[in-house]
Amino acid sequence: MILHELLNYDTLRVIWWLLLGILLIGFAVMDGFDLGTGTLLPFVAKTDLERRVVINTVGPVWEGNQVWLVLGGGAIFAAWPQLYAVSFSGFYLAMFVILVALILRPVAFKYRSKRESATWRSAWDWALFVGGFVPALICGVALGNVLQGVPFRLTPEMYIHYDGSFFGLLNPFAVLCGLVSVSMLVTHGAAWIRIKTEGPVAERARAVGSVTALLTAVLFGLAGLALWMWVDGYQITSAIQTTGPSNPLFKTAAVAPGAWFQNYARYGWTLAAPVLGFVGTLLAFVLIRARRDNLAILASALGIAGIILSVGASMFPFILPSSVDPRFSLTVWDSSSSHMTLFIMLVSTAIFLPLILLYTSWVYKVLWGKVDAKAIEDGNTHAY
Image (cartoon, rainbow, N blue to C red):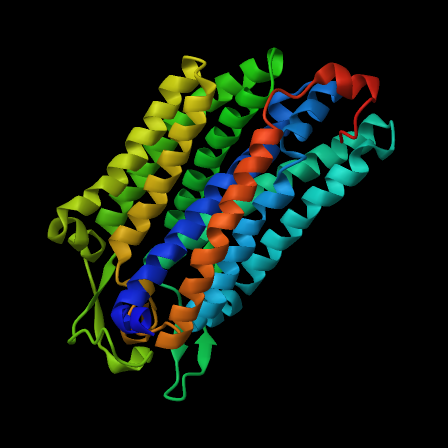
């Protein structure tokens, strides 16, 4: 109970905002190379054997990587229930499309090699492409819409009404953010393929990864410029009640040009996030070109972390702004679970998250090394 008293409500809210960011980064880094590998499959592998090699670079680990998606969704549900209610209902169709695409992956893994038909296998290869490209694109598009504000409103009884549509999400700025997401995850996937393969496949991945690494830096810069010039940010205009109950209607807020950049001026250390995004991505380009594969994927991961952290640093304390009325926007201070719930979840996370990290590290240590094309061709393994 002493620890519970030391960790006051506003501190726990900030901690869970940080943990939500960590879980999003964990999903983007760990499942990101799966998505990137699937997107690259039809382009870096030309023969059936080469495609089986690429598939088996992620075959043993993709299921474990999905844990980060489950953790992220669970954290939103338990720590930020209002965020869960608005986002999972408002973005329902978008999330449904993502789930359908993700479901294609295990089906394609299991059924691709059931028949010798080239047409059959090619169809499942393109299904794996869809399973990688579509989630990467839509996640970026969703983030772009969050930065612009989501069309939802709240009644005095806290009922949620979403006034948007699926195709309304596909606006130019959101699509640009989607392209940033696709490009950075393809770079991450190319770095992974470089680690796990050799020969022509690895060289093709090197060529593609070099281009997409530079493209990520360019698109990230263009997205930042567009955010500055054409997208208005949000700011709280009333006194901030950090320890009050979770009710967004207790505050007032307004839309203001350049508001998403105020934190960078107010807290100079937050500039480390976009700098990390650029430096990590450009460093990944240099290391991929230099064939320093292990370092390249680490640099790519740092770039991904920097890009995601840039969004969080820009928006704080907003989590989900409302384009209908800024007053309805959800912030760190007014959309969380209770003090006790956040504390119990933090204790549970402190116990189980290290165990997940230790087990994941052990799995990757055991499975490290190149995929053996000869063993796949001979049929002496349980490879896909």
